[in-house]
Length: 192
Image (cartoon, rainbow, N blue to C red; front, side):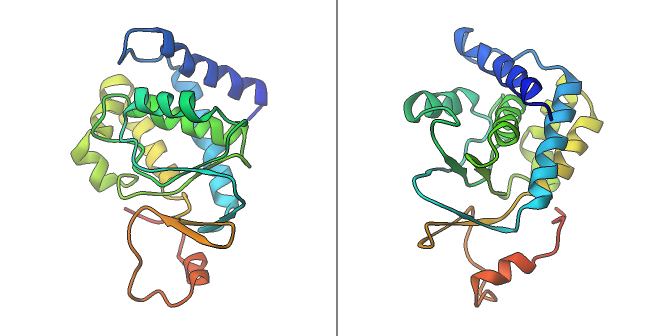
């Protein structure tokens, strides 16, 4: 994706900072497809276990709480001035999952060495269909867009190691895991 297009998408998503809390960003469906596809291409090139250098800010569940995500950036710095590792659960429960995941994907595309995203349990279709992301996509756009995001989620890495010392992931370790490098042998794309 052209950096200018990524910047324009980020700009539109950040414009809601000055609107009433909870206001939906004006999103063009073509931009959502493009940013999701560009992010997927990056995820496909990354290993399942990503290795990062410090300093990096590590963030847990966002769950569609877009205003909380913006507050994190306001407080800790916006990419590329700050590096981030997000541990999953970007969507569901909150009312602005599309803004949340689109901004994170756009930052990943624009600043691929400053923003890292891992898969959580809410980046799967069976969970999305119960907790709100599916309904939000259908209400605001259509099933095809939802499916496109789901396909991108299937390529997200599942774990990260910061400075060869800090293991990060959304959930716990499998009892079958004996060596961290086994994570890289997990099949991709991960279904449900």
